[in-house]
Length: 420
Image (cartoon, rainbow, N blue to C red):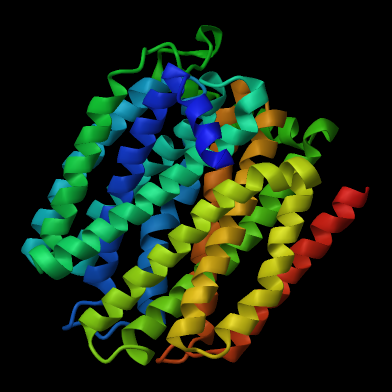
């Protein structure tokens, strides 16, 4: 297969191999932690979960870091990215362990969310750093392939981590705290793996590194404005359009996720364990879509261009999402999860490539942090809209139609931009 050949070529780069190991362990731990938290909040038998409760949890975990996100980018353009991976994963291992203790103590949800908030806060730095560091370990000729395989491998690792969490909870130990501790162990492994990378390899360039934290924070507003101007310049307008399109597609994905959670919890399964198993299967099928996107995107983006590939992904989702979503049945739901995984990941690979190839290295950290902020805001906004539109059992025709219209609008807008 071409994807196997491409991966074999990339693995010849020692820096890429080591960065990929950090990504796989880190995002695998993310998958474990997120599934454990979702199981505790949504599928605990003693909790009567609503779409509003899910939206509130997402807002608590993600929205505050829409404010912190830009600071992450400014710091990533000054801190050694290897050190961010080392200390960030060590801190996440500690806070995940604290979260497990809080689950065992059955503390109020708000206190649990504060602890989980600390884990996701550091996640903003780690994920943005992984994307910003990728051009430092591969050459320009292979950047599209690396963007196809590396983030997709991370997403698959997160999916595998979620599968591990389901396995631990359903087979080994019916305890969300035990699952969280598995995630903490994987975070620790990611920190150890980062030690194999030289401090200077991942950048940024020494001329851009400031040793004093206060100096970096003082210039945050000025640096962010410079980053926005950098993104708005004519050579980088395609990156701005791609970020906007990806944010809208992320909104659609978030709304569908809330609907799937509610359907699995109430409409499509008779027990909470059955609903949790169905959710795990849906996430696994979506992961298969991510893998297919990794195989297809280098060829499709090479033939069509990354911008037109985003257009094709959005247009395909606009047609297939209502066809598979409106029956509100398990079979079409799983097929729809595959389609959403394929189209969302395909568009993300193309967006990453456009941003990385058009943004200068000194700006990549802050641009990818803004990218991350847009993801968070879109996801929380989607959860809020879903909470308003979803009935208790999760079946909502207006929500499915609204999502299809947004996908269609993204496809039309990208087509017009590419023609220009």
